[in-house]
Length: 558
Image 1 (cartoon, rainbow, N blue to C red):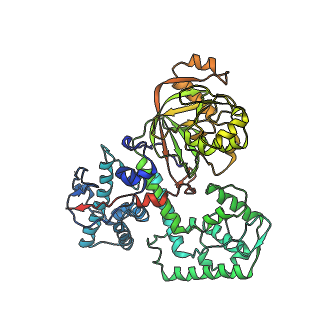
Image 2: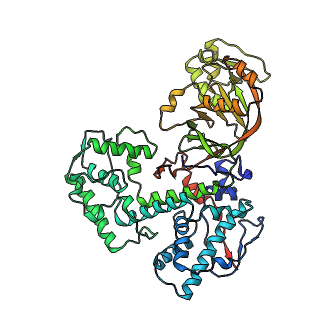
């Protein structure tokens, strides 16, 4: 997970479901970040047009004298990275046009008209950031401050975006089709184009000799060596780049038609690293998911990184000193104390049909040895089919059954099977113990979805790479470590906690001396601590919704 030491959420955005994004102006901005056209240019003070008629008009000050274009070359560089990111993030076509213009202006003197246009571009950037600041109820220009080129993370992202866009212009990225899996040791005509892509993306130090014989030298530049300023439109390619693309395309076709290469150890290591960087099982087998990511073009990768970076920066504002954040697509929890990460843990999140919601809240209590009061939907969807197959299921799994008057109900195994085949008018409560689905700890936080953090009775599931397996709650692998921290720092009655800890069947609720902020986020691309781009599957298919969720909003420059 990317460093999130400054992550925050507007408290007014908590506990909203995915389906509500289109009715959620700020939430849509936080998640989607697609904006309508900025309509006009002028070097005058800015006034933001409200997103809806109910929103307040926010008057923006004129650019201070210190921001006037005294050094155009420096000014171009200062806004180039921001404009590139906003262009790729589909914020507005105006930013795409501005980026193309800025590329032409680099390293040359600007005339008066161009200097005026440059100042207008800066005003448009200021207008955009200040508008989002106002919507997020920031008391200071936090977004614009977070995205200035001096920010180390931002500068690293911009460098990656430039490299990916240069690669997009200098190479072809045709769809590779694989009829079956490719395992280490096999031969295939697809090995050559796969090796070439791994080389261009930086996963191979050099092209294998067989694959590189028919590839033009100038086309074989890995992403780490591409540093020129790219254009933003994928169809705008220089004549030289067109030659490279044709060479690569012919090479891939020729390789597919003529040359079967062995899937050797060097390529297996590269594929395993590639799989790890994309959140896949690092088994070296090239299957459907690995091929999907191999087919993702540099342009698509750049857009994904830009959109996620903007979402991350919108979260990265006035954070508390300590908090928990769960990145749903990464299946990871990060616990930050006093600005430092003290715990990273795998998690299990909701399956696609029962997604874990995006929310912000505060952990307010911990339950030791929690009973599980099974939601009615889980009884119907998951438990009743088991009962129909095995009348002993409830007894074996430690369930108590109650009618809706609170009276305990008992039946024979055959009677349970018959009841589960028709109407089942009962509530189920699973007793604490080794088989309890919540494990030993439950961390409660207020939300309208009845989800929480807890342990599990099936720790082997954490070995899976795709951990979208729950009904919405978040299962934590290192739940014991998390519980120990809460016991040491926040649990009020530590004496009772110590007394009851050896007992695995007695349930006890514990109040906390203070609450702990918790956030769930949805990031499918970020830079890790080593500066490498991490990608994850869009498990809930939300990237499109994020892009489309923002209602029409127009910035006016008066």
